[in-house]
Amino acid sequence: MRRFLGVVVAFALGAACSGPQIAAFGSNSEIVIITSPRAAGEGEILKSILEREIVTVQYEKAFEVELVTTGDVDSDRNRKNIVLLDFLEPKEDLSGTILSLAKGEGQALSAGERNLKTLKDRWARGQTVMLIAAPTKEGLNRLLADEADRLFRYVSDQVQARLNRSLFYAGEQEAATQRLADTYGWSLRLPTNYDIDETYAAQRVIKILRDKPARMITVYWEGGAWEDRAASCFERKKMLAYEYWDQDEVVEDALQVNEGTFLGHDCTVLSGTWENKKYTIGGVFVTYCFRCEDCGRKYVVDAAVFAPGLEKLPFIRELKAVLASFKCCEE
Image (cartoon, rainbow, N blue to C red; front, side):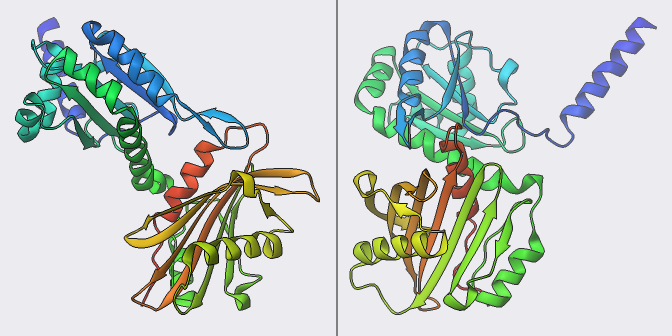
């Protein structure tokens, strides 16, 4: 009888494993680094790289990082953001797991031709597993020392990409997205609890909001081409903030201006802080200015956060995930 029950339990577990994946758990800003005891020191170095401080309206850690040095993957395999870190020779359990997960690229990792690989939804739905490896202990230390910024950007980009694709798992307002497309010729996918303010639609300004804490999106468009995109972007950002958000102003001393891409379009990216002297409040923002060649429009797509007493980076990441769904030229 005991043997029969064991078979039934084993069958049930097997059936559960082959069923739908559970949702990954944890904060969007949490990362768990799993490394082996022999690479615990390297794990501490990577932890410090990922916990670097970012200035918003205050100093904030870029990520909250938990370091697991037992090499045990199973206990944390359902977390949202996982980094597996180890050197590959001599081979141990964790380095063997890394090579197994890398599959066809394991040889490139072993040869040092590659150091990074990402897996989506490996053990849970809405999960990112990042592999960071080098052939030897010395090589792993060189990677951490010489390419700290690249590693930080890699992990940041993968965490954001995970959030971009998983944000809408909890639900979205599909009818609202379609209405934006039908009415204005562009669209955004909106999670639940976001509201659309069309008060200024005649001025080609649409505001999208979520409260507690305040998350604010502005979409503005006009025809023509940019003559000086960076300067024009800044002028339009200032105009939108002051005229449509009750006299908000850009803090120019904290402004960062970069050239980049937004959903495949060349763009100017503004980031920094805003303030409202009338109410003595402020927050952080990011603004993308680009031209959609398919429909001949210039767009200013802006996201801002007002979250007093709270860390701002998690909310900016959420807004960036919403903006990543933007379509600029709908039929």
